Length: 74
Image 1 (cartoon, rainbow, N blue to C red):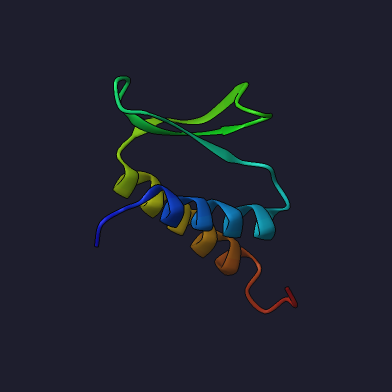
Image 2: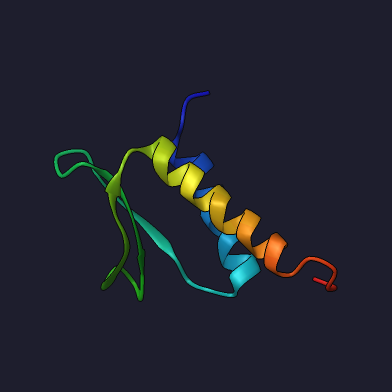
């Protein structure tokens, strides 16, 4: 499956909805790919990585949310 910016943005939107956060993505192919940021890009949450790695990291955040909140109303 090809990782697209839109697919990653959708996953970031899901994470922001669950955690009530304001994460965003910075992409620069010359510096190594994607970076997860917050506070309008002023804080780096994760260092640069490939699109697939960022997508899987976001999957992990979603899985962690559901495992922590297991049994509670969401």
